[in-house]
Amino acid sequence: MIGVKKQTGTVKSFDGTEIYYEVLGEGRPILMAYGIVCVMNHWHFQSSFFSKNYQVILVDYRGHHKSAVPKNIEDMTVAAIAKDFVAVCDHLKLESVSLFSHSFGAQVALEFYTHYKSKINNMVLINGFHKNPIKGMFGMDMVPTFHKIKAFYDSLPETFNFLWKSALDNPLALPFMGLTGGFNLRLTNLNDIQVYLRGVKAIPLDVFLTLFEDMMAYDATDILSTVTCPTLIIAGNKDNVTPMAFQVEMHEKIQDSALQIIPYGSHCSQLDMPDFVNLKAEVFLKTHGY
Image (tube, rainbow, N blue to C red; front, side, top):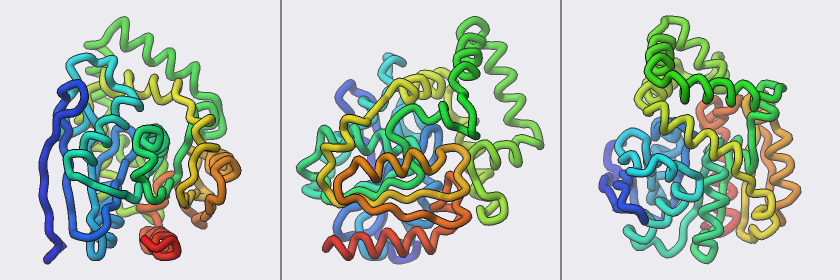
């Protein structure tokens, strides 16, 4: 991104956890929240596009990559991450933001909305969900499976860690993660899936499992009807990770929201068809004077 101004920094959140952020470009701010155990690279098409005319802010979640793991692992929660975003906004003295989110980031966005409602100009929720997504993941109820995995980890953490790392180092991990991570393998760049895989490997398992458990318990259904800012909801019609029913429900319950369905879009529509997603998001922003 030649010619685009970039700055990086950290800020201490409410519990002292150091939160890493990057700022790209200048103009009205767009704050971006990625999915659980994801990476900033998930936004690279959007950050490079929007930073030409906007100030894009990317944040690493607590326990993710360049942000610190909280001293109390029980503080790996949706609510804590939302407070981290508040800390970043306060630190950067942002008066009004557009909030983009992907997948789990929608839970963060909705929780963040409860803390920062007066300063959120609009939201773009991509392939998101507001409540436990794994009841419908891949057309199945994955909750019992998760509890078995968590019980295995709790009883034999070192063994589970070894098996987890070995599985991720397997040559079959890339196509497997491509499918289970919700990519359209015909559209998504292989390098983006590789970056995602490296990111997953870098996240401590206790961070992943603790946050995943909180994600399952979190339910923002009651928040949806309180959202009054312009909201664009984007869904992929080939999303097997978070089926469209989640996005349709959010659309029905968020007043005056708009729903955009991405043809052939997987769970990572912003990587599958970035130009289309960027165009729809840009038109949405301009329509609402942002």
